[in-house]
Length: 358
Image (tube, rainbow, N blue to C red; front, side, top):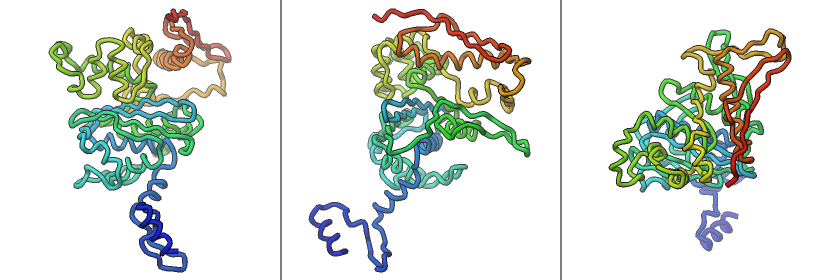
């Protein structure tokens, strides 16, 4: 069998022979490439594993802001993660997906998910995804990485339920309840790294709106008047520097965020609002270190009264959820959703105005 494998390998020039040494009795030593591929299959078992590895990678690159845009189109999950970290030089933007390639020669990070810094995370992602690539980056520019997976890499069926915070018997706050989906993965990471990293999760349109909103307070508009090329700016600043819908579509697309020109107009007009950070959403906007006890609606409803802050936060959640309808049926909200508590129900009212289809 060994001679046949050697012959095939010689003829095809491929690493068909996965065995470096055959010891007999069914025991072999795998070649390095085959061992790495098998390890990659073990490291990435679901889409949520991809998300946490991308988050850890951005954190280790020194990012303080991480934005994850995600959509599901037919049988494909699209993920685009943009950060403000140290960036990747052009010469390394393909090589970082090779096994054992790392920028952490003298450092290694061990966290709740294990050891990070072996140079295997991006390799493992590419081995399990249909597409994994750097969309844009540069030294001190930040990085945008796009990943597209198919049904061969499973994900949790429920991707809409968000987790909640709970307190253990030892008075420790943890992320609990809810499926281990993409929102929970982001929440667990954001909670673990809450002192150094801020994470945002949303649709491509929501992420673009959020980045533009945050950059508005950080950038000097006067400096943009003397800008030679928008590509000279860090990735996040490029989205803010776009002057009209057409340019916004082009810049967003270059970062892996696909928008229609109509959606770009809605972002520029403020019709699509920024999302809150994952931590702000997880804690319902309470002060640092404080959590809100969830209301059990299966119990006594008669005395249910929502706190004003919780009611407004819930209204904002409903407003974001409404984008599912508005993007498909050309309708927009006239005002923010109103939330009313009744004897045995909570009613949310959306007042809409039909938009022109032209």
